[in-house]
Length: 80
Image (cartoon, rainbow, N blue to C red):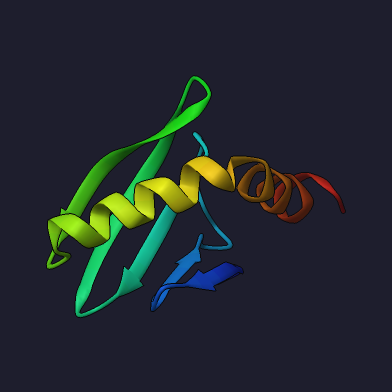
């Protein structure tokens, strides 16, 4: 389970045996969410147990770190 980073009490990661398209699992604060890359930005696909304010923080983090997430995905799945 490659971890991309941790910010504001949330862990951003993907699973080693993931599927396309690029997406990120976020876990923390007794909740869980998945965001999927659509075009050039991440959109919420699923969320449970995360407060609205925290979801806004997550979306902001993903927006500011899209390139970091994409590089981590590429490095893990395509650079062998």
